[in-house]
Image 1 (cartoon, rainbow, N blue to C red):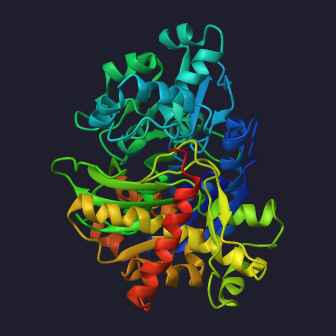
Image 2 (image 1 turned 180 degrees about the vertical axis):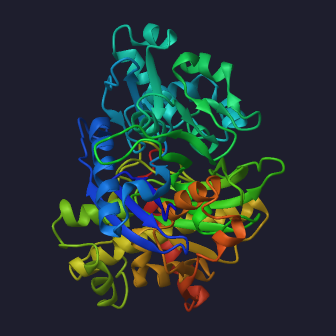
Length: 497
């Protein structure tokens, strides 16, 4: 009998594969970094072929690490960087352009035009999103505009579009399955989240042919296709669970009830709240309305606040400034000083996301004095992640009418004890960290396992999540609010308006 489920987490900085047992334990893992391309300031691109080859490599390495033979796999789950856009030829599988990454600002002018022409209310009403370069729709438009004949070929079905989940599914199935599911579709600016379909008015607005779009499944836990042979990866393995990375993390955290929330600390930082399966909540304060999963993987509404730069600021500290050798060093550096000494980093390297949505903002390090050291700068980097999350949490509390009483956390930076305690102190709510912080992959595995009866029901799945530590607020309110006021002043300095 098959003994394992494999989850592929295709992220912004790399591919991760994890192999899970029936008890929800990780049997094996593998990771491979992904090359980042920056053709112009503010532009970020990936090689779509490298995404796939890297994914295949880590899947096989993780199976080997787990001691699981490929033929023993029950299912594969996929979770992915969501808005990153791939356009390719159907006949050859050749990408027409590098994948445009969710962070990339190269379609900012198209988004500004949509705002100027008065289309923002229609886009938000139908998609729950705002006209920002973050989302996929304008990225598709941009690629089609720049490649002669591409739009006409797309209208004939000769050129296909997909977010990364769709690209990986298409490649793994040998071109047999061109599909996505609601959580990824809801991030494109092309999908009506109320009617659950591609929207003709939006397709016309962005000049994207319907024929190039993938089919959208009813939910995230179902069989989307089966593998064809790729080297040691055999044919016939069901690809049975797919969800965008943040919704997969929400699912992996067990946030299946209305009002439950999680925050993922990755390249960016993403706070999501399950808002239930009733009417879509109205996001008034700079948040987004999007689709997530209920306990069985069916669509529910969520409120989301997206912070563009979180862990990426720590990478900047390491790679561009050379102040650290590894991200782990920042915890001790931050704890080595008594305060931030008035130093704030606003990491608007790709503009500011929620709740500001300022594409033209740029980063700044403010409050420097002669006494500021690299330890204060490292502390400011970590604190900036918590401040941005507080920005989102405050608005989410107000817009939802469901005050968050506990924040479940995951992602690489959630391992940083200084950051997690500061987050609890700054927000005034307990921060719950699970034993398994790679909940993005965990969510994809759970969805795939449910779809193939590897796990019988959500109750069986829920036992796999266990708390590792709870960080309890321990900062006086006056200190908390003074620090936050300093952050708001720093943000005001970089705003473009």
